[in-house]
Figure 1 (cartoon, rainbow, N blue to C red):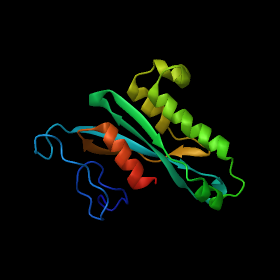
Figure 2: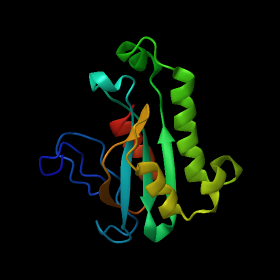
Figure 3: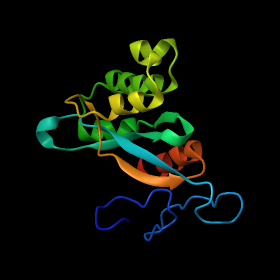
Figure 4: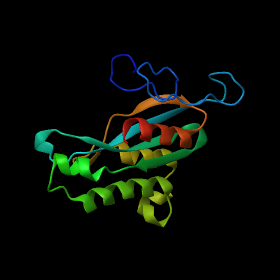
Length: 157
């Protein structure tokens, strides 16, 4: 965990609580080839008045690689335990939309024409919906795609 914030030390290999650590970059030097990346969790807030949240995805952005991706996983049983009347289709649709915005193309709508950094900022902007972004964190990685999968496993599944 990093400096008392309750978040893992993403991509630095400095995890102290047994979380999965990233593989070293090719070449053996712990920092060689690593680039700064940013990430935010996508949280489901089924009933705002109760203040309960559930992690359901992660958005990863690496400016140096012009890379943005969202990876999601909806644990329906857990969501229904928080709110038996949760709109599963609506939540799934919002998570699918986040993945589509990152992927670009027709499914991203008008966001498709934006550069990766703008699409990331669009997804991590605060909002009052059932799927909300958490705070943005940073780390170092030599493989942003693998980092997205690692964070999904560590923080969502």
